[in-house]
Length: 185
Image (tube, rainbow, N blue to C red; front, side, top):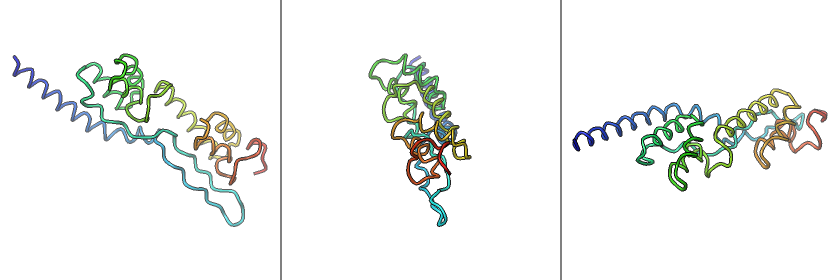
């Protein structure tokens, strides 16, 4: 019986390892949405001080940490794998049900290791906010100056997105005095 349990455990570890390998191939697509990438520096033209707009990337750092071998709880391990695979509801649940101070709590609270520290928001709300800010940045880049103003007003203080909105999508070399929609661009 003990030999069968060892064989079963070895098979489970092999399956989890194979699953992690597959997940690593899928995760870059998900992470590219919420990874912190510095935007291209403003490019000025000789005839004007305006620059070409380019929306900044999401202000979140890091790549997901591998979920395998976090602990010895199969249910929590499955939540960790789902979290790693981009299921942010699983990250939130893992954080809620895991023991205080455990690796599981850290993994769920950092949205699968994407964040440097445990978030005060749920991973689901964080992702929804990032998609919303990304949409505003895209509209701003496309010339919607009201979206630039909204992006400035709703972005985290000091973030790259706040600066992007404040410069009307990098159309100005410095922050606008007032609103982009009212500026003479």
